[in-house]
Length: 442
Image (cartoon, rainbow, N blue to C red; front, side, top):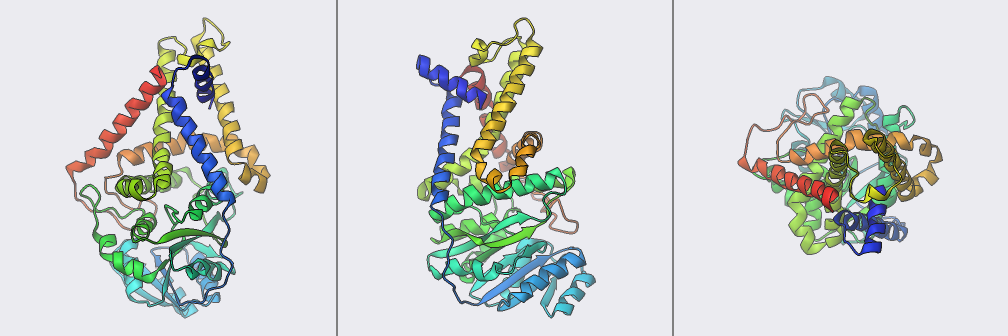
C-alpha cells in the first residue's frame, strides 16, 4: 500500500508510469467493482418445490459429528439421502447411518469424485445437493438453497458458510474472517452477474442433469497430462458455466464447518486449495476471456498478487543489501547512514499502511464482528507468512499430482508424470522475475 501511494504520487508529479502502481490501481478498481455489485445483490425469496438428492461422501468423520450432520439433514426432509463411504470400510459410520435410517453404500475406491459418481448413480432427484461430511446445516439450509432454481437459467447454487466456534484460537478466527469476506464481497458480486467462479463445496446444489452430462470429463479430464483430484467444487462450477448456466450465491442458506486449529493442518488445507484454484484458473482462462472477462480479471489478479508482493519484498531486500533505498522511497525522511534502521522503519510503516488498507477493504466484516479488528495484525501476519508462500508454491506445483493431504485413507494421487508439469514453473518464474523487475526498476 505504501509503495502504491508513493508511486502514484510520483507518477502524478512527473508523468512517469509505474507498472506496480498500475497493477495496484487495477486491484483497487476490481475491489470497487465488487463492492458496487455486492450492494446490488439480493437473495431469492420465492419458495420453490422440487425433488432433492443429498449426496454425502465420507471417509473418517468422528461418529458424534457425523451423527449431528445427518440429524440436521434428515430433519429438513430431502427427497433422498445417500451416504457414500469411500476407501477402507468404516463400521462406525455404517452404524450411524443405520441408526438414522439413512441409505449408505461403500466403495473401495478412495476419492471424492468417484464417491460423487456412486451417489449420483444411486439417486434421482432433480437437484443434487453435495455435502461435505463435516458440514453442519442450519434449520432452513435446504429450503433456502433450492429457491434460485426457480430460474431455469440457474444451474448451481452455493450457501453462506461460517466457521464453528471461531473464537477458539486465532487460526479459526482468521478462517471465519476469510469466509465472511468471501460471503460479503466476492460471492454476492459474482452472483449478481450469474458467474460465481467457484461454488464452495461444503454444501452446493446442481441440476442433476448437468452433473450427468459432465460426469465422464469430471472423472477423467487431465490438466497438463495429469488427472488431479483436488478442487472438485470449482471443477463442477466450471462445467456448469461452460454448459451455459448461471452459478449463484444464496445468502439465506447458511452452513457451518470446522477449521484447522493447528498450523500444520491449515498449511496442508490451504496448499490443496491453492493448487486446485490456480490449476482451474489456468485451465479456464481461455474460456473466461471469451465469455466472462470480469471473472478472468478477478482470478488472474488473485494469482498475480502473491507474486507482486514477493517482488516488492525482494526489491526491499536487494536495496538493503546494496545499502540503497528502493526507488520512490528516496525522498522519504528516513534515518541516513543506517540502512538497517531505515529498512526496519520502512517495513513497519508499510505494515501499518497494509493494516489500514485491509481495514478499509473489509470494513463490512468488522462492522459485523468489530472485535476482530483487534486481531487484524495477526490476520495480516498469517496472510503474509502462511498464505502468501503457500499460494506461490501451490501455483508452481499445480500440475503435480498429490494426495488429499488432510485426511488419512483418502485419494492418494496417480503416479503419472508429464513433462508439461514444467509449464507452471516457467509461467511462475516469468511472473516472479517480472514482479521483481517492476519493483526494482519501475
